[in-house]
Image (cartoon, rainbow, N blue to C red):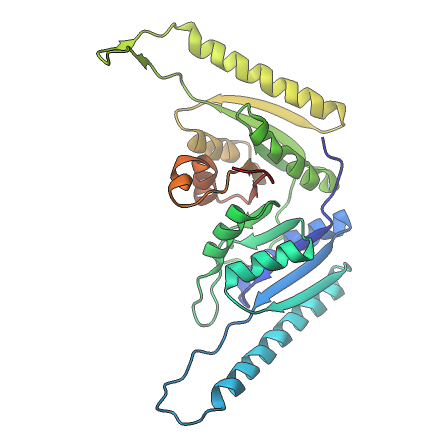
Length: 308
């Protein structure tokens, strides 16, 4: 398993307190990992004025004022973080479409973790952070940690217990390295979870009736899942990781994951995703998608750097 830690963490902001709720956890992770923290804001252009207004320079002036206000906002964030967190922190003001600009900045800056709230509300009711988080988790080959903001304001979420979802495949195990990179600096334990769905009856070749399933099949399926999880857990324990394995029966993987996260009082769920959108989004990665949309826990989505 990887022994690395995150070295560069990006937090996208939109100028709202909701978006800033990603900062406490990102700051704590940066402090414990020795990482650089980068805050990024995409410039929000002033809407074009009606052509009937014959003041050709007013749009440029208003846009310049908006840009100056955004830069002042970023400077205030940097000043606050440097004063309270004592970590290296930088900021960048970007131009262009929000999601694509942030994606390009992540890729060009060498960031290896994005921490973002799942939505934000600014003074002009910009509801873009949810769609931006969705875009980033589907296109980036680095982990994206998504936090659902609360009305209470900034609270540093504790990371004592991280739930890692597995399904027996090497692909799903790719979430383990990223979960460890979060767990090691803060001393968190891991819970390995495999949702064991019941074996469905097989229809005969003529489609007339389901073929009978041995009563032992589900038990064997559960035993196989348990053996697999224990083998992964044993490997982690040899590396000094506190880990528990849970093979849990359930009719739906996403529902089982969400229920277990609540039952175990997990502080974060880590899950691998294929990251596809459109038609393929409906065919693969649907479990991760349902977990992201249904959980109140922070979610670490890992899209391995390999072809889908």
